[in-house]
Each structure stands twice: as structure tokens, then as C-alpha cells.
Amino acid sequence: MTKKLTKADINFEQELWKAANELRGAVAENQYKDYILPLIFLKHVSERYELRRDSLKTLLQDPKSDYYTEDNEEQNYVLEDPDEYLSKNTYIIPEKATWQFLQDSAEQDNIKVLVDNAFDILDDTLANYRPDLKGILPRIFVKSQLTAKQVAGLINLLANPKLSEKENPDSDILGRVYEYYIGKFAIAEGSGAGQFFTPGSIVRLLVEMIEPYEGKIFDAACGSGGMFVQSLKFLQAHNGDKKNISIYGQERYDGTLRLCKMNLALRDLSFDVRLGDSLLQDKFPDLKADFIIVNPPFNVSQWHPEDLPENDPRLFGPKDEFTTDGSANYMWMQTFWSHLSDKGTASVVMANGAMTSNNKGEKNVRQHMVDHSMVDCIVRLPDKLFLTTGIPACIFILSKNRDGKDGIHRERTNEILFIDTSKMGTMESRKLRVFTDDDINKVTETYHNWRNVIASEVKQSASYEDQAGFSYSATLEEVQKQDYKLTPGIYVGTEAVEDDGIPFEDKMETLKMQLEAQFKKGNALQQQILENFERL
Image (cartoon, rainbow, N blue to C red; front, side, top):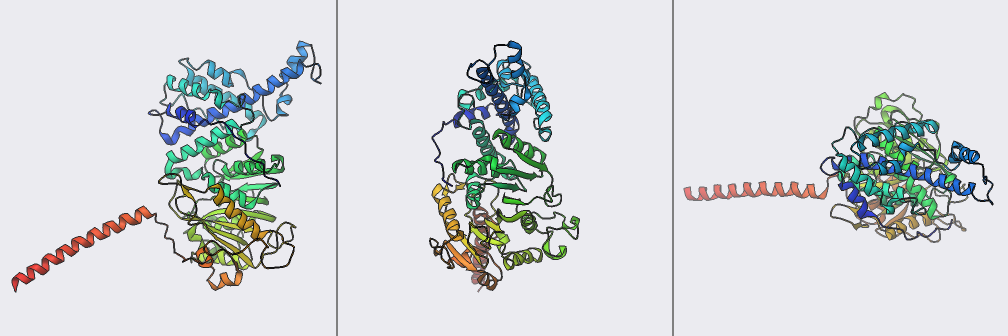
């Protein structure tokens, strides 16, 4: 499928952060999203309604249109017909829930009440058509410490024409605004942001590697929905149609699920996302997805595997041998595999420790996955890619299309591709590294060239070659001889360093403390030696 070039777009970052600063002092930075994102969502839904209403008015007055009529009663009937809006994936919004009403009322002393009332009205309106959206907009402004002046300032800043979909109909403006804020809020949130945010360059790599052109897409730890949005962007960049994908997700936290629903609704995506712990409360037991794109929580301990039924269909073997309370990493793996269709592929971010762990409940699963040809590719990631954790990470690509019978990819059941990106990426700040377009293209092209269908029957595709220090296509026998360790450094030709999960800065601080202690001990010993000499 041909990739469409991304066209130039407007810039609005300064305006967006000015809006966030309206909350400073009254709201903690990690709560900005709770106030700004619902307003952005209301603005989007309201503008979509106004755009459709304006379009209907134009059609009703155009003699060349099938809608044309001079009958005022007939015109009003069309303008108030819910089906005319539903056909364009929008809804009739009551006046007091419209963005224009809030903007006109922004200077009133009771603006906080009006905003919360607008949320209630819009929430009820949406629930009439989409019951799954009920509760998406909670009342939060009245009970906040924000002043009426601050709320007015926030509304007026968000009313900037740069931030209007009506003024910029081809820019996906409100979706981009939402995405920008989620990224900014992740920085403010710190370690707590991991439940709703995965940095964009990692999401792009996950999506570009497995190419979700059409089919069912599933994320069992969907957070704010970034994997789904990037899948949509991938389709748009390749002239695809979002009608060809269906979205399914599960999220453990209610507040994060609300973010996800708003994010997907902003993009006009149809979806089924549900609340629950995917490990113990699988809400989609019968779902078979063509693509799974997911960044599950790393190294979750005490997740209570004892609560799983003995015959849980996700498990590869006996529960006491294929689970461990010490880490849920490989329960996630078994969950993802169980949800793949016959030709499905999963792209999974995972802690580096999963590549080498010797715990029975983890190594047994990894060995089973290798022996049964489930693992397609392993990518070691560089450090500092995540805002929310210093734990080193990697990507597991799991696939059920390794037999080459799908007509798209070659047979590779006896191979695993290893890629080491530990030296790649560019430091965007002192704490955050990002993959550049060139980095992403190098990794994805290497993987695609390796798995592509080829005309001749050879081990590797004509355009793929092992690259020392970067990539290597290993046989299952080679992996088995390495005791099923999946660290790319073992295979690509660089020294395999056992990651301990401790950030560099913490290691240096520990070493400094140890050195200071040794200096003190040395000084004391020196003094003792001098005193001994004096006694002679």
C-alpha cells in the first residue's frame, strides 16, 4: 500500500501550554488533564454538531440539492432529525452543552456551575446513542479550587481559532491538541503516567513493524488509547480506510478508560473498550485479534495467579508451572497469544528481564514459546525511552503467520530475528530519548525485509542480510543452545550485558557512597598504622 506524505500543518504548542498555565496554583500539574481534556472533548463534539447543522442549512437552501425545500416546517424537521447527524457520526447537542454557550458565558460568576452542567447534559446526550460513553464527563469544576476567572481564561484560550476544527477542517486539530496534552501531562505525572501513556516514537515503532492495514486491533492494557490512534495514523499515511479496522481494548483504571474513550471518539473511531484487570478479568474471552499492540505494566508482582482457574484456556500448561506471583510478564504473553487470530501478530513492549528470566513460571513459558515457534522477532530498546520508568525494555513480536501460508510473508518457523537498537535514538532532553524517523525506518525495513515473501527458496529474503552489532537471524537450535535466552546482544555480535534494571544515575550514586566509605576506612587504617609505628 502506498504511503501518503504528511502535509504541513499549523503549530499551536505555545497556545496550548498557556491554557494549561491558567490552572497553575489551583490544580496540581498531574491533574491538568482532568480539567482540560474534557473541555477539549466537549469542544470537539460541539463543533462537529455545528458543522453538520451548517451543512444541512446549506443543502436545504440549494436548489440543486435533494434536501432543497422552501417549507420552513420541513427545514426545521430536517435540522432537528437525529438521524441526519448520526449518519455523519455526530449528535444533536442541546444549547447549554455547546462550546459557543460556554464561550458566551465565560465571564459569568457561575461559569464553574455552567461547565459542570454542560458536562452532565452532554454525558446524558451521548449515552442516549452510546451507552458505553456514560460517565465520560464527570462534574469536577465546582468542587475544584479554580476561580471563575481562571476557568474563563481557560475557555477563552481554548477558543483560539488555531484550536478550532471548524477553522481547520483538514488538520485533525482537536485530536492533535488532545495528544499534545497527554504527552505533556505524562511529563508532569512522572511515574504515575505509565498507566495511560507510552511515548510516541515507541508506539510508532510498534505499529510500523506489524502494519495493521485491516482487521481487529486489540490492546489489553490500552491506557489512553495511543496504540489505536497511531494505528489510525498509520492507515491514513498509507491511504487506508479506518472502516477496515475494528478496535477492542481493556483498561484497569476507570479514569484512564475515560481518557481512552474521549481520545477515540475525537478521532471518530468505532470501538469497544471495557473496564477490568485483563490478567484476572478477561473481558474478551472469545476475541481473536489480527493485531495486538500493547505496552503492559512491567514486572507486576503479587498479581494473585492463584485466582486463575486451573483450566484457564490461556495457559500453555499447568498453572503452577506456567505462572509465578513474582512477575506477571509471561501471563501477559500467554494472554496475548490466546487472543491472536490464526494469522495474527502481536507487538509487545516488555521489561528486558523477560528475555533471560530463570524463574520457573517465566522460563517455562519462554521455552514453550521458542520451541513452538511463537516468537518472530526480539528488539532490544535503548535506555531513557520512557518518562515513567528506568527499567530497560525490549519488544517481543509474536506471530501465528510464520508458516508462510498467508501469501504475504515467507516461511520462517525455524528462525527468530534479533535486532539491537541500544545505540540508537536521540536525546530530546536530559531524561528522554526518542527514535528518529530514520531509526524507525531502519528497524522496520530490516524486519519487513526479513519476513517478506521472496521468489526463490532461500533461508532469508533477497534484501535481508545480518548486520554485525545490529541484527541477526538465528535458528531455533541456536536459541536453544543459549538456554533459551533472547537477549539480542548474544546473537548480533555484541557483548551481552545482563541488565539489572537499575538506572545509571542510581548506580553512580551508590558507587560514590561506597567509594566515600572506603576512603574513610582507608584513612582510619592509615592513622592506625602511623600510631603503631609511633609505639615502636
